[in-house]
Structures are given as structure tokens and as C-alpha cells.
Length: 245
Image (cartoon, rainbow, N blue to C red; front, side, top):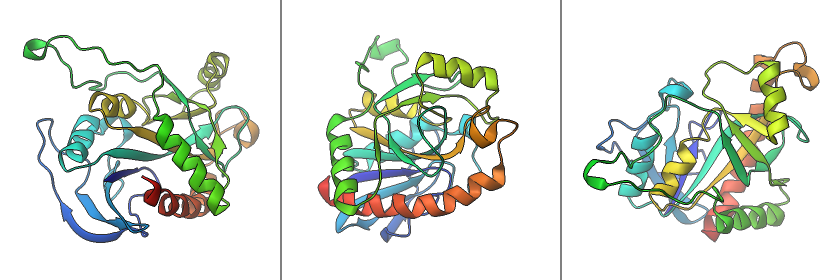
């Protein structure tokens, strides 16, 4: 069963024919929202709102472990995560991008299920953080639906909730980051620890600090305007990719 994690601008999935909702207790506390079970594109799917259905949970307060554990516990076999990002280089607001790599700049988050003790010390391979098979299916669905989806990019994960300084974005660009967001980690590695194939659809909603029309400041109104139209294409993409998974 496909799990979809919705971020900013996607707290509800209108294309999901909801059959039931369930609050799933976890050993790690409460998940961000109830899980919504139903069908999309004729296939079983489950939806979780990363920031809560009312978008009230900031990035640094998200219980990533509870979210991934709940999805796995209730039968998810693959995860597609939707996240808004700022464009650092080579991308423009309104683009949909499928990252292939990630750099983790976040801190202070519960970032693993493997905390030692009776479970011992476990190291998971994270050479390629996103599922190649899921990425191929996303690209195929986009091509079939005539939906522009940029293939590849490096996601720089910051802690938030504040936006970045120009100097931080300059450093990230030197490091090779393409886009910057606040929720890509530890979500991706927790999925890997649970052996859940994971891919992310990044929605570029603004130029990162110091770039383009964000040279002086980032416009929240501008972000909201881009989100409104971009999420329509995200929903169309999800409806096309679900039958392939």
C-alpha cells in the first residue's frame, strides 16, 4: 500500500477517496495526524499530514519516528513524501523536482530507531537515500501525464522553522545543494531503517535567500501564490503514479 506524506499546502488530499481514518498509537508518541485510508488512482493508499491537518506542527516539532512507524505498522509498503522547498540553483518557483541526494544540516531531532541498548548498534546503508524504483515510477507517471518533473537534485535539510540567511544558502550552494527544505531529514533515513522505499516530490515555492526575487527578503505571499497552483500538479502526479506502485 502506498503511503503519501503531505507537507505545507497538502494537508488534505482531495484525490483520495477516503474510506476510514485511524489514530495509530506508537511506541514513540503521537503521529502528526490520523491516518486517512482510501484509494487514489484505483489503488489502496494511506495519507498522513506531516504538519497536522490544521498545519499546526512546525518542522522541528514533527514526530518523524511516530509518523513513519505508524505508516509501516498499518501496512504501508512505499512512501511518497511531498515537501515545499526553496530553489538554490538551477530551479525556479513553481517547479516540481525529484531529488536524488540529500545533505543533512538539521540538528536536535530524534533521527533513528536504533538507540542501542538491547537492540545493539545498527548502521544502515544510506548511499542512495531515495528509492531508485520509486523515482523511475514518478518520472514515468509525470511523462505520461505531461507533468513537468525535474529529474534529480540535492536536497539540503535545515532545522527551521526560520528561513535561512544568505550566507547559509551560499554555503549550501558550495556544498552542491539544489534546493533547501526543513522536513527531508530524518524522514528519509527513518524510512530506510524501516525498509520502506521512499522518494520525495519537492515543490519549489520560492527562490532561496539572496537568489532571484528573494535577494532582499522572501515573500510569504509569493510562496502562498505558488503553492496554490503547484499543488494541483502534485495531486495530478500522485493520481497517476499510485497505480504504478
